[in-house]
Image 1 (spheres, rainbow, N blue to C red):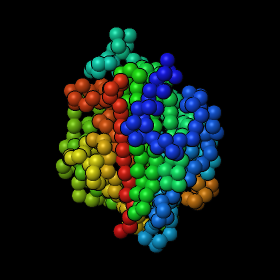
Image 2 (spheres, rainbow, N blue to C red; image 1 turned 120 degrees about the vertical axis):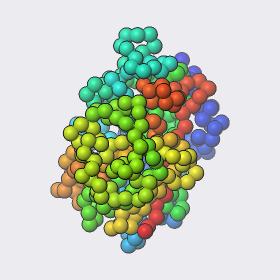
Image 3 (cartoon, rainbow, N blue to C red; image 1 turned 30 degrees about the horizontal axis):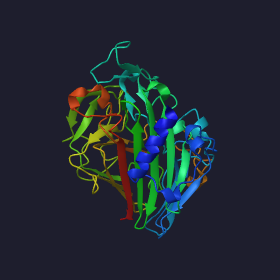
Image 4 (cartoon, one colour; image 1 turned 30 degrees about the vertical axis):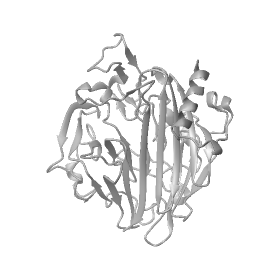
Amino acid sequence: MVSKFLTLLLAGALAQGALATADLDFDFGDLLHPTGWPFDESTIKAPDGSVTAKFVSIGATLTELWVNGRDGKQRDIVLGYDDNSKLLTDPAHPYFNPIVGRYANRIKNGRFSIPISKDPQPGAPNVYQIPQNEGNNTLHGGILGWDRRNWTMISKTSTSVTYFHLDTADEGFPGTVAAFVTHTVSNGGQYKVSILAKASQKTPIMLTQHIYWNLDGFQGADTIFDYNLELEASRVVAVDGTLIPTGEFTNVSDTALDFRTAQKIGSRWNDTVGLCGADCQGYDNCWVYDRDVSKDSGFAMWSDLSGIKVEMWTTDKAVQFYSGNGIPAIPRKKAHGGPDLVYGKHSAMVIEQQGYIDAINNPEWNQDQIYGPGRDFQWQTTYKFSTV
């Protein structure tokens, strides 16, 4: 049954242009049972040299991202490991730059129903229970989410690489989901990520890329407090002390959540106590964009030190900004001064372009995050790098 589904979805992906037949290079059996070494790096580079990116198959993870600073020198601006096997084995499990799923962010009580409902009860009909890996809740798909699954590289050129993952009801989600992610770099400092996911039956899907950004590459500064952030959103999802949505929204006016005019991340730091959950200072919040940002940027951040600026546009409706409040003391990559120096709190920020968080438990929002036959999940985010 899975083989038949796989055949149909490959045909559908080809028809939708998600795959280029000339570049396909894989064994059909590998899609069902990946056998490749998950930590082999693949490199892609823009023809003009403005962006170089490296990836591994585990989690279809971005491991290095080199862009030009104001001084003309390239810096690696994402956190990670020199030994990429730690993406699978590090007990700290910080989610360094993978594709997270089958459902990104948090699920209240690790539970949902189809059709969706408010506060579904355990054992009730059509209620699904996912392993809880953050207190009573589920974070980024469960104990063994897509970030720690071995994806199969099925296409590679000098400027793009495509990975495939088959989720056969892992972590208790219903049905089988097949996903393709394509990473592409191009002239003018552009890096684009496209995801297509097809499901055999109705299931929640919300995927995103979980990048840790340090726009200085740890050259001259070790924290993000002086970064400038601009975000076109007048509402954030209101959450409780465990970062689970209450069903309400908070207006950002006159608060430390207002980045509609560019602000330094640390400029109102004293006012962020409690914004990221109980006993927490900083940001870990979901902003809802005020407009469609699929064609031009609704999010920008830059460092006055390195001069590196990144603008983002996305097909999604919201964005999670995490100010690195809980980054553990992990040895840095050599490019960042490691291994003697370590990453730590606020040494990077995570930006997750995604849908409304835990919308599958908030039907009053009218956000349909249930996908299945006849309705595919599609996501695309473009990162545009420049200097200021």
